[in-house]
Amino acid sequence: MSKTSDFLTQNFGSAVSLSEYRDNQRVVVASARVFELLQTLKEKQGFDLLSDVTAVDYLEFPGAKDRYGVVYVLTNTVTGETLIVKTFVNDPTPKLKSVYSLWKGADWLEREVYDMFGIEFEGHPDLRRILLPQEFVSFPLRKDYPLRGKGERHNFVPLIRAEG
Image 1: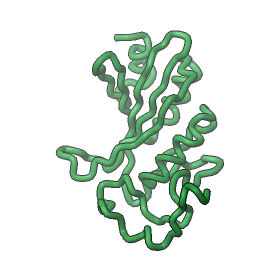
Image 2 (image 1 turned 120 degrees about the vertical axis):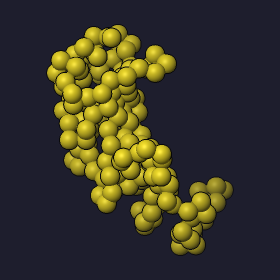
Image 3 (image 1 turned 60 degrees about the vertical axis):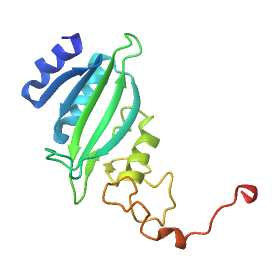
Image 4 (image 1 turned 90 degrees about the vertical axis):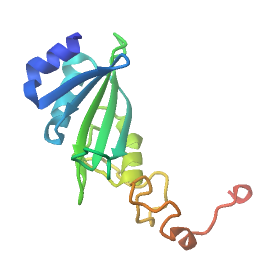
């Protein structure tokens, strides 16, 4: 057990589930407490770098109880320790509190998760699509999104690199 694992066990008890896989420490926490946990990790454990926020769609995954997993990858740049924090949200309106107030780098990462999975981040200062046009109404990384799309491509004018 690392100091961080001990700290999380002491401060969050049974609210967290700790594991380790290939030298990566992983923490699973309920969505209601994920912001509190992330804030505590930043302020009291020195995890000053949010290097990634991503999501996983567990639709029809064997044994899955929740639809979406949201993953935060944190690093303490002084010690080099990396920690993976995971939480879950569900349809019809998957939402989490934005961590933009903790790490400004969450800006584009949360926008990308919103754009691809439709997971909203409450309190984000500019939560709009980052990769797809604003008029695009679907979320293409959801597992129930058809592989050939929903016919949206016909609604958009193709961009030609030479014209751009």
